[in-house]
Image 1 (cartoon, rainbow, N blue to C red):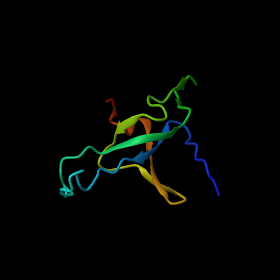
Image 2 (cartoon, helix red, strand yellow):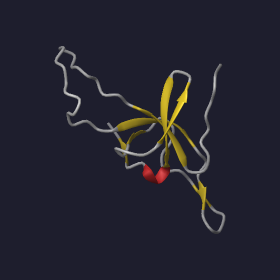
Image 3 (cartoon, rainbow, N blue to C red):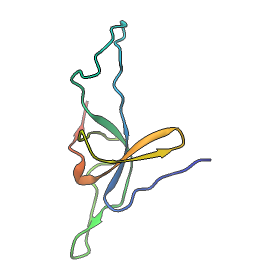
Image 4 (cartoon, rainbow, N blue to C red):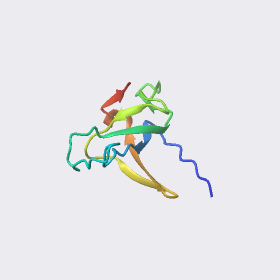
Length: 97
């Protein structure tokens, strides 16, 4: 059973990027090491409307890597995968290589 979730308004569906728990050489990393709380944008809504009815587009697009707040977002589970649903203004930054 395949499902596709399309966010409404200015919401963004994000799959959290899990940091590796050990290095390539086998060294175990502590859980509390300095890691970025990041994720990949899976789907975006069309945007919100202002008081005049004009569409305000979402600032990120599908495939972007983003910096997420430590707390917040709504957990969504589709099949075996878990995602987080954020409002556009809750996303802190876009990460570039």
